[in-house]
Amino acid sequence: MALARSGLDSLINKPAFGWACGSYVAWTGDDYILSELADPIKFWKNELTKDRSPPSVYEKMGFCALAGAYHGRRDTSSAQDFERCLTAKDKQYSHNRFERQQIDRFLAIPPLPDTPEHLAMILGLTWQEDINLTADQVYLVWQRLNTLYSDSNANEPGKFSNQLILASLITSCFLLGIVGTLPDASSGRVTLEPSIPDNLNYFDLRNLRMGLDAVDLLYVEEGGQRTFVIEQTKGRVPLNLILKPNLSGTEIDRIYINGNKAKLEWWADPKIGRVFTQVQLYLDQKQTVTVVPA
Image (cartoon, rainbow, N blue to C red; front, side, top):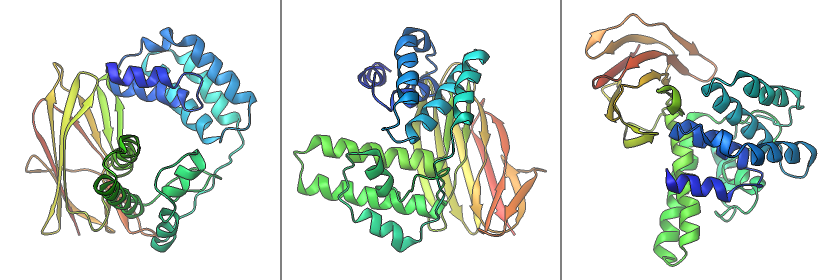
């Protein structure tokens, strides 16, 4: 937490400061910083609102993250203030579903971003509406970033700053894009919205820290069955976890929780060939969820 706080302090008066504050509270549960950094947060909000030069993604991400942080603190007035800022802005983003070759073209750009626009191009994004890639596209980006990181590590072992930047991109892309981690440490709640690509049949994520708590997440696809195993490994109080898997397919035949057949709703988006369901779990023990598509 001390390292995260030092990173947060280094972003004071930077465009990404608001997003960093909200993310810090979500992951650590330390909402006292909203009082400690009240003046820098106010300054960030005022400066970014009147200065149109930074990309508007910083406003969107910052306003959303801080609204969530203040809601978690039960400060509804402050949360609604940032929500009003968010809804008052004209939408300046556009959603473009890039094909595989288009993402490859963007990734041909040198891997280390020096501007938000550059980072957006590396991730295969444009700026005009809500950004949203498919699971396979995010996974492809993650694979490419991992390759780039491995290459830079092998060829230029002395460039630690480059390696750290790429490592952070890889981690963020995986945690937010594939695992869909949405923590709320102060409320003892975490949401996982894993978007599993077609060509991913296994991953094992260990010691995912959220404040004083930690969770392990295992995903295995075998024989057409998709199984998630979630276990809380640290923390005095069991977490409340909401699992919202997003899987390839058009229909779900059965869902099992800890080996017992469960009656859960599911829905499908035939346009993109994905099926969805939602399970609420109390992590007082290891929990296993198995989804069997039709």
